[in-house]
Image (cartoon, rainbow, N blue to C red; front, side):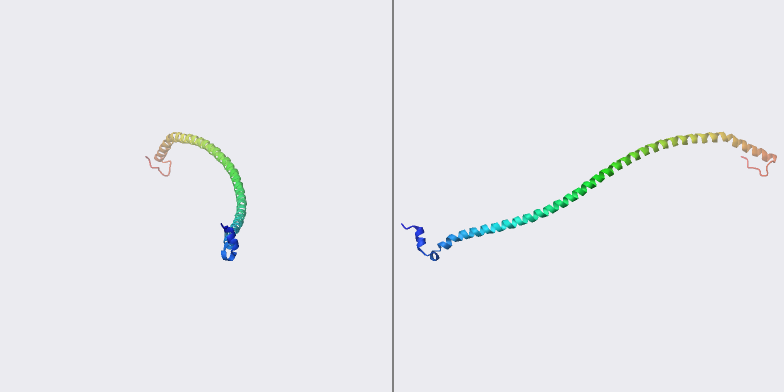
Length: 148
């Protein structure tokens, strides 16, 4: 039996196409590996670009968050001040309520005094009216008053 390898070796490679046939899959394999390496290199470059951009973005976010932390701290101070102010307003409203209560009591007393004074001066008004009427009848006045 003739060995197939020997037969191929005996035939010139250009005629048999063996050398070209055997190298073709190897070349394709090398081309695929080279293309995969180039693709991997491009992917690595893209990833490095993305990571660089991400690094800058994270740095900017860090600055933004630091600013936000400062704003929140300032807000905390403002809220504490606002809380103290509200406590002062509450105390002032309570004091004003007390003052209003005292003023209402004083006003009530004054109204009572006015009522008493009106009651007390009614007889004086009647006496004055009677005195004018008598004075007018006696002619002691130049103008007589209308009597009731």
